[in-house]
Image (tube, rainbow, N blue to C red; front, side):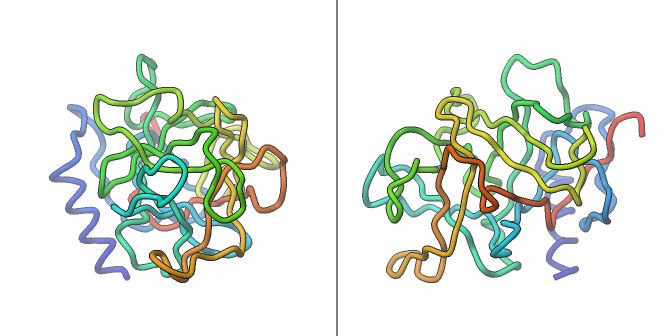
Length: 215
């Protein structure tokens, strides 16, 4: 595990387009209380089931037919890494901290597509479908998620419970025990749901956490 995360840190150092003068990631594993900044690469863990938010180059067989998003049970999987990005035309830059209420985007590291949602029905439960769509230079408001921090604190940190609310559909990023049995066997459904429920809660887990500018 430590070796694979170290390898990820080296990969990011050489492959991500870091801004001139941006801090170099020095640790692949965040400790509790570490602030999350733009450019951070992380896994989001569903609080109740401990599954990681995941995507892969397998399209949905229904709904939009876009790249599927699931919950993945194993920790060691590179398809569960997401890059935290600001929205286009934002003044935010890499290394900036992310306050409660900010609209962010999550870019799937392996395929470069954006975490996306819309009014298509999800395959198992019939809730709002969550997919991966677009790519560098191709993004719209379907990729926008509002960060809601639960409890105390106004800045997103690694040990905080969060919700992500989709701007267009008002659905919360959600998962549950309903699992796929065929193509993504053993993985669980990720969808959007408009009600605020315990299964909307996520935590930042493994990743490469860039230092916050000025810290």
